[in-house]
Length: 237
Image (tube, rainbow, N blue to C red; front, side, top):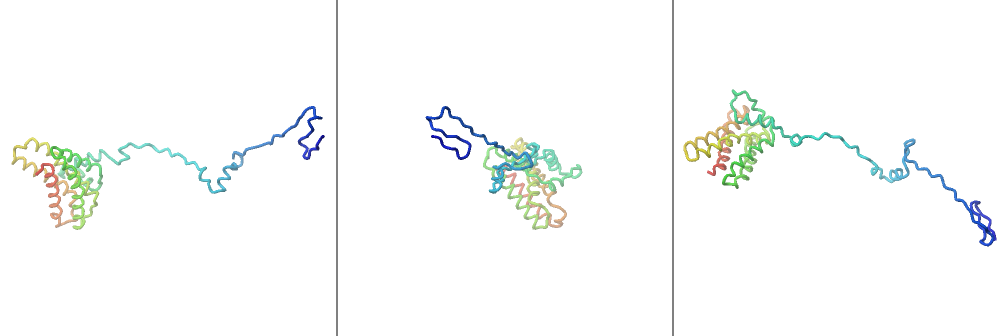
């Protein structure tokens, strides 16, 4: 029994009459468009773009940024800090230093290093004063800043913070000397007063400008008291 094919592709015969079975299946010619010709997107890409997911196919170009040194990343200029240290330690105008750079170009890391160094020196036998020194530096500078603004000064808090921090260097300089002359009370007192005047002069000469006119003592006196308090935290008096 034989059935006639309906589409011309296959022939069905009964098992009793057929000597052999044969057939062919044509292979469809499948071509994938990978987007190489004419700028056409492949089907998957087109499907995603039509559904609003084209952002999944976006590839960010890697930017070849040059790796900067750590000091440059943290905005630390060692030469600038060293120059400011010399300006504070040698405040005499006759030496020719441009001392206004300490005020006009303030930085944070230099004063912080000076305050931490002063705190490390003060650790000797009285560790608890370290937090007080940093606190007095921050809030004492804030007090001087507010007072300067009330008196008509044109200074920023960053400038005051930097100048007050750098001006602790004279107290660091006299600290080893105070250890040596500890037994000589009169000499020790004179050295302490010299250190306080040195520090206060360095700070006041930078912060107290001509704009204060007759009001200069109103700002110099609090600065002087601030460094007396710093010294008292070191000596324990």
